[in-house]
Image 1 (cartoon, rainbow, N blue to C red):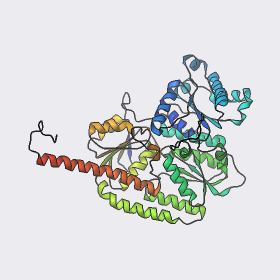
Image 2: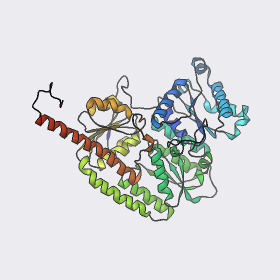
Image 3: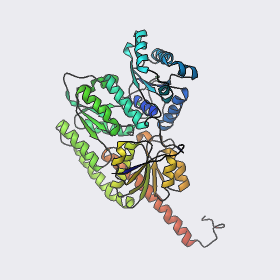
Image 4: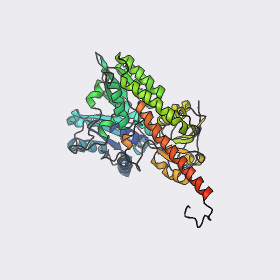
Amino acid sequence: MATVEQIKKSCAVNPLKMSAPIGAALAFLGIDRCLPLLHGAQGCTAFGLVLFVRHFRETIPLQTTAMNEVTTILGGLENIEQALVNIHKRANPALVGIVSTGLTETKGDDVDGYLKLIRERHPEFAGMEVVYVSTPDFVGGFQDGWGKAVNAMVGRLAQPAAQRSAAQVNILAPCHFTPADIEEMRDMVEAFGLNPIILPDLSGSLDGHVPETFLPHTLGGTKVEDIRRMGASCMTLAFGEQMRAAAETLRLKCDVPCIMFERTTGLDATDRLLHALAQISGQPVPARYRRQRSQLQDAMLDGHFNFGGKRVAVAAEPNLLLELTSFLTDMGASVDVAVAPTASSVLETLPLENVVIGDLEDFENRAGNCDLLVTHSHGRQAAERLGIPLYRAGIPTFDRLGAAAKLSVGYRGMRALIFEIGNLFIEQQEQQHHTQHLRETCHEPQATCACH
């Protein structure tokens, strides 16, 4: 059990935290023919738009109700109504996901009441689903907003079924799953002859493909009709604590049982997942996964020499922090610094002595004696100042290509992590040996020596 330390200071320096509205908006981007609508000022949407475009390097459909000083005081009914009218006329999406912000939450807009009035005034909206989720900036963080959005979609759209499908399972994906992770998860489920409904499915909308045409909403992802069919599934597989609320909603509303998975990276975690799929399907584990397990074991044997005794600092969202710290300790490294942006019950379960709720300044101040930093791209300045290698994990990763294609799920995902991080350790060791060699062999003064 880890001890959680809350840092208290006047302001965040180099913030680690990302807001709940941004997390909710990304969850809606995993739905086919969806258009997220942020109910707040234009700057709230602009910030999220820039962040997602830089990370995924794709066009991102986001809309705003464009609240100003006057409409904030008088209420946002007209802004929401006009936004929905314009969206229906120009984009005609299957789903509009309305996400609140700190501005409108502080005012206290009754968005649920607004939507009832708007539905009465505009019967033409009958074919367009609207899901509202309350995500004030000042409560929770990125993964909390994601979890709330998924829970709201399940609560609004999933329908109880008179008859269940023995071959259909629900997959509730956490915010740290990349499109490549979701594709790997789909392949694993389908290998057992099961039909997965993945919510949200970023592998359909933000996997980095060139679309045949341009449309002002998402192109690919979970279909609204599939969300409605989730009540007919025989089982829900929920990954990460952030998905617990949505899984519970499905259980209470549609009587679909659930299996929770705290981790998806690691030998034991993948063994548990495959065992569950084998029990659900009644099928043996396919031979290719037995082969992949053997390959992972070999990679662990090869890599543990490079991980053993290394000191690592990790800063990430709580669920991703659990994945990364568990993986590193499994490989023999020591996680000396762990920083999360927000509180979560997950933090106490980390395999560490201490975890800090703070920002990247706290991360940098504590990581000076470490061999590796692990966080997103906003940690690159700290890595440069400390002279420590940085492994980029999470959102945003904007200074490297292929963030959406990174794989960490299953046997293949852990194997890829071992190779990537192990190579960083090898490179660091080679540089240290090279520097030591120069110091031992060069007798010129440092100011005149070409080695320096």
